[in-house]
Image 1 (cartoon, rainbow, N blue to C red):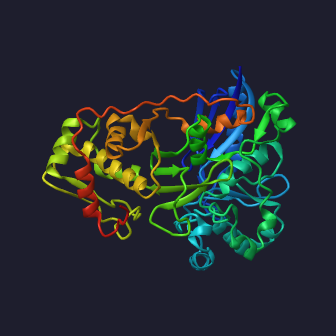
Image 2 (cartoon, rainbow, N blue to C red):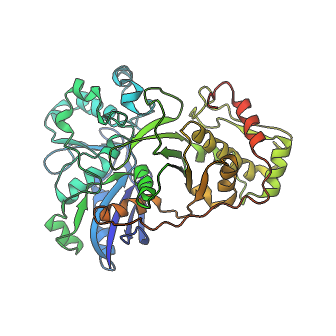
Length: 462
């Protein structure tokens, strides 16, 4: 049976999967995503990562008939390339650029409608990376062939074809307005259009694996290389491929990311946590994001689960609350960074701390939902759904929606793999979801209102 190889590039770790055409994971390899301190700045070790990728393809190819390769990644990685490879090292997006350049960038970045995200820290935006490279290494920048988002960089290395792709550019790059489906004015103002190759769909085959690489990996010379996709959009595509619509997906991990296919939101208006991504067809995908996983960890501390209905009932009855924000980021509530607190009679009770942390994370996820248009179906996935109460709490707080939980931990890989069969698919892709068990839950809506009142005046959603 033919398999799809998915190269999933995270900030901290990289993974290489062999999957079925339906997105089921057959095998997984992983490694740290190595960062070098410099020179000329802190950067990812692309050469070492390339060696690891090729060795991994050779390893998986011994046990699986790999028919296609697709890369997916976070939205803050980009590489300046020449005719064959990188001209400059790939900037670590947590690396701060020079202070004067950062200030200049803030003044030129444009409106929220163009940016589709807040101005984030470090070098999180591809446009900010491009400005740094242009100013710091003008000769390399002037001689470059393209600046490629990370999935398309790896496609370029694998098959030699340079391409742009909408989900990657619409993910906080500040090079593409997801709301308008067009490059931002910053691209024209800086003359960067020459470095952005024509857009190709995420699912399109750009070419076949380079002959020397195919021989090195022991793979067929006909192995297809797909254009590639942003990781959150890949996860969202998994549900689109399964035939779901009128949909909001809440993915949980270090970040809580909520994406919806619903319209009706003013994408010209900036709000805390608001974003605008794109789906594989280039349609705007309004979203919300907050570092809910880190907030959860800050509250739970050393306490371990599972959360219990008994502890939840005690917390709700006592109106004990965790309030934002414990981390250095304001998240959904401007002005709250490092002001997080736990209040109420059970604030010092370690026996309820894990359940309180899970409830707090669910409050943050529900705030994300309230900041988006209501949808008929809500799907929850990611790390927090390992605890059954997380999905149950969100279902109780959203009684007018069909709330489903997906416990598959490989959503990004599954969605990326499904791209390989996009043009041939004649029916919905298989999807295993379940409805959460809400039996034994207390009435959570009054608690939600109380929590929201305590978060005032930062939160303005109804």
